[in-house]
Length: 123
Image 1 (spheres, rainbow, N blue to C red):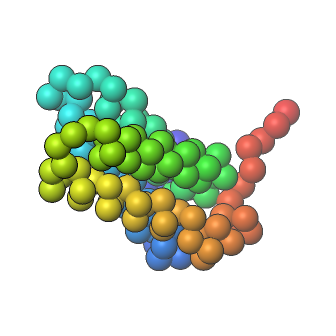
Image 2: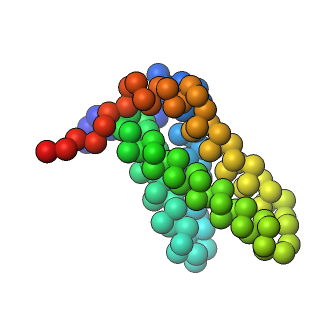
């Protein structure tokens, strides 16, 4: 556990900023947990562990982050389209969710993870 990194500056900037955005989302979602919404705790922990996986160059962490970004955008789109009232906060969340997904799926991020990230060890 001594080698665990939270951020890796040697990664491409798209992946690095995507990792930072994951941690930012995790902090907000865990804050919502303090306000009494337990569903966001799952998303917060998911984002935290995905960010750690990306920082430590684990392929599972990268794909977990992509799945989280897709789930986040789909949830926000559902609320945006079917929720009734549209607020500035919802629009900002949707923009940042789409930005996270775009950063993770950017060709520079995808090619870096294909080359350098470690596969899951099978025994």
